[in-house]
Length: 105
Length: 224
Image 1: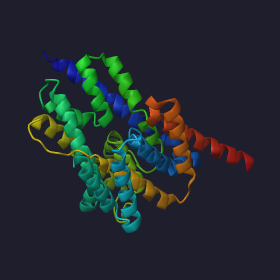
Image 2: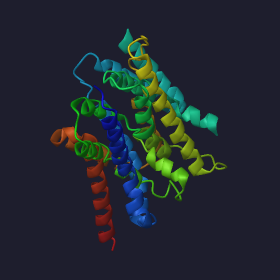
Image 3: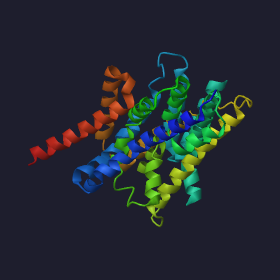
Image 4: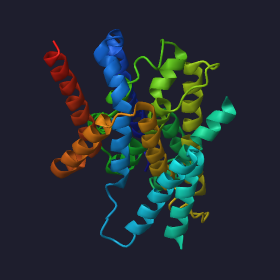
């Protein structure tokens, strides 16, 4: 019923494809890594990607629904605690525990 | 060093273990031996791709299709690597593993945190990557073994990853004190969400880096 050979080749293919996306830039651009344009990219890309990741994980929240209040409250708590105390772990826990409490009750 | 790393990666544990467990439960439904779930966490080590694998496996997808769809799904990683060419240092076994384990969360952490001065940077990143993969593999294994047997209410725990990204945006702001990348990223995301919603992540990253490079080129030209 289950085909182990298929699963194994499946895993190999998916491993290679994933690793390829992570390895390619290092292989192709390593020689240019000291180029001013590369250090410019290295400086500005992380904040851009981080902002995009935040928007990405929030994109499925329906901000017209009642449930979105849970998300907004948890975000506000995370940001508030972080600006107040500046302790990443504390901010993340505060937001997450509040969110878990709100969605589970 | 390890204690500090465990503290820094705890939010990722909160995300990876429940998410890995969800993967394990789904994988169990396919009927393969349990240890293949562990194996996938060890070798593929990509959340979105592994979830996609459930659908592809149950459909019996062809291997060419598997390769192309995985490559497309993970294409954003190309831009992660591009921005840490220097940071990841010289080639060696450790760097090989760092590149292999470059997930969204690991990338976010290594580009934001500061490595203590007395510590070897590559070593520090190595343990961050290793510990993160540990969480993921534990999740994938627990999920498939426990299946639906244990009722453990982790609903909402994955908000830890959202909170992590939010905190890292604030930390990035503190580091760079320049509003430009945040504006470019937000505008690009809105544009891509409206016109290419299915490719939001990779689309926004490609668009914002293109804008960044264009701005630089214009600036260089006008200042000669």
